[in-house]
Image (cartoon, rainbow, N blue to C red):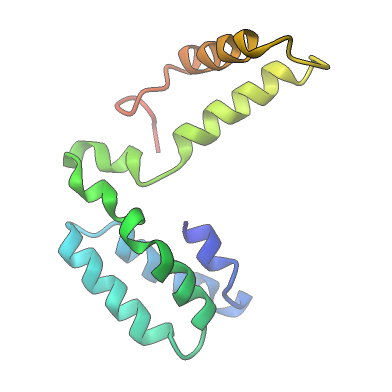
Length: 125
């Protein structure tokens, strides 16, 4: 999500906005994250309204990881797990012109996931 917001920010302001977004997503709890979000809205509503609107549309979904145990937050607030499986799937299927049926696709996904040891607890962020 931060990448989608940063796409709507002028280049000269990207680092500053990224720092404020990091404050939101790496807050100690959901209440503090909401406070950082409110500060973000106040600060950037007039300068980059499209970025504020983009974040407004998904803020509740983005902060949903706070409802899980704290030891899982690190894995849940990123898309590394999904990106890793997608990358491995593309690598394994790149040499194939066509995947011969749904069963082969499912087997390839399971193989990619198992080869990476892709579990929430083991994914380095």
